[in-house]
Amino acid sequence: MPAETGVVVDAECASGPLDYEFDCLPPGDYFLQVSTAGATAGDLRVDYTEIADDGPFNDDCDRADPITLEDCEFVTVNGTTVNACWETFNAGGCTHGENPTVYYTMTTPAGAAELDFANIPAGTYLTLLSDCAAATYIACSEDTNPFENIPVTGNTTYILAVGTTDPAGTTFTFDVKVVVPPANDCTPEVVASGGSASLTSTCCATNPGDPGSCPPGNQESTVWFEYQPSSTAKAVEISFGSGTLSGVIAVEVLWVLQARIAPVGYQQLPM
Image (tube, rainbow, N blue to C red; front, side, top):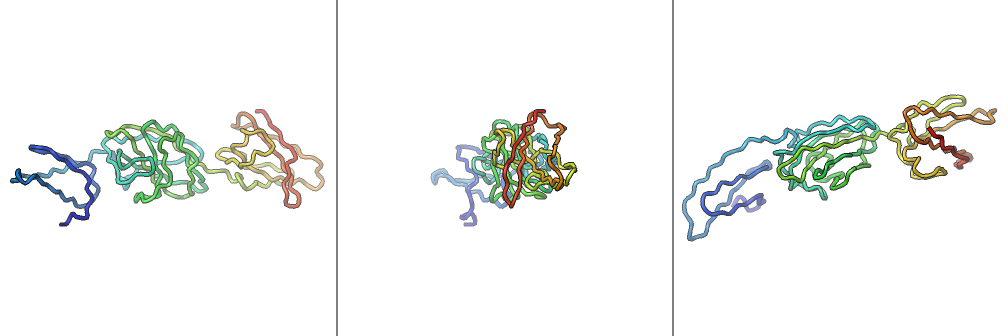
């Protein structure tokens, strides 16, 4: 029989006239097996009526809506899964195979290091995919909110599947930010004698993982500078303007000699 190797996608058993709707059909050919008890065997009539797709346009991964990311700034995404179909895959605790799902694309800028999601409503979950095949997934939010520190590569397009646990679908909103660390996040900006630094933002800088000499809590966003004083200099005065920073600036000075780094002091400068 042609359908022996097929997968049962749904079934219904009832007495009398039967009107049954098979929803959210994946592409392919379908075989219907119809049977009765031997004592009640007889003639039947089978009619097929196709129902037009009235779900959101991005119900299909091939029609994913683009999200325009902004470096180090959250952007808000609004959408709906009302009348959207469930999918043929699950990703950990993100049950896209059971709940309505829609799709978005995101292209990361050069230098991107991670994605952060925030303000995810209850009953909404996010899965990051590398392509529409969904053979493997990169990360799944499950019940995590915020959903942060997801490693990504710059100049790469990712697929975001958004599912909701309400079978009928619902509207949703969430925020997403791409983290693009500054150039001196890990590699110091070299400042010549008597010069000024040009890379002066700590936005989206990462934590070096070393608490150093400063009290914890003030080094979550760290950038580096290398100053090369002249051979005649006895001391160096460094001034820090506030700009858009607020709170405390933690400055730790390290002295390099014979490939060794030694902390020589720090200052916490109140703004």
